[in-house]
Length: 344
Image (cartoon, rainbow, N blue to C red; front, side, top):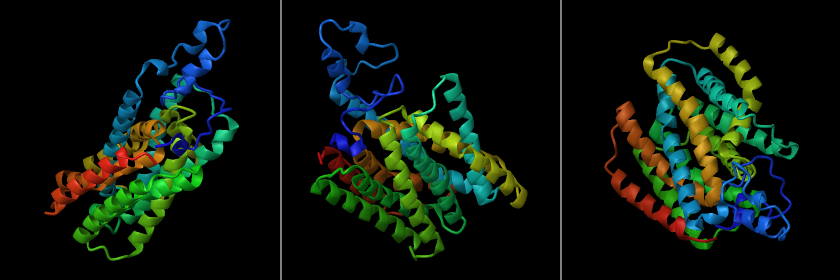
């Protein structure tokens, strides 16, 4: 994909962290070389700064794909883990506790690394991330899962790549190729048709909540991918969690006092995974991967997420896997391969 897919202008960007160029920006070496023979040679090899000039571009793309795929794998467990959490806690308790608990490792890492707060110009984007992926998407999907199955909720994940790519195009001016969009649409149709066919798919309140979650999550992904070109991905989600902390702490206190609490081993395990796996570690890998390969390309890897979610639903929740799953999985993988080969 083109560099403008990450919503970053090519010049005049102030970098506030040593490893902000871990996305593989080849401009690092060129900038140092352009300073002339009198410039110190150590300027391009500051401790902690990756040597982007010595790494093949394909290595960066492969690393970005791997990181984005790890993020998708972590996210695929979100709905089953939420279902576990709801077995012993109310929906507001699950959402607020997961965010508060996720802030613990994120805040500890920020303090241990003595990371300075982001520049003022980045806080609006961090607020979008906080509203989209820290609060909005978890809350809306958790409320939907009160009356919806995890397989039906996977519909929103099937639409998320298209929504994210569209949001990225509007936000950044990126223009993916026609082949990219056709493959994305086909993949989304396959995933949606598969999920709706095996779950009934009658539009209801849960569907409205899921579609709303789709929009706020796409906005959070797009803005997070943009910010991950300025700072490491773990700092993006870390500061978003910190920014949302006053809301999540107050919300957790109110939810614990208003909703019934009957924790079980599964409900506690579910909330812990949501906090550490989905909310923090998964977002770290996901944003870092998007920073390398672009928002639209990375989002297409999520076409496989609903099928992974269905697999976990069978293993963890005892749901029966539909017979059409292998065919749908193959079709989705073909679509992913096509989108990764396009150059919009």
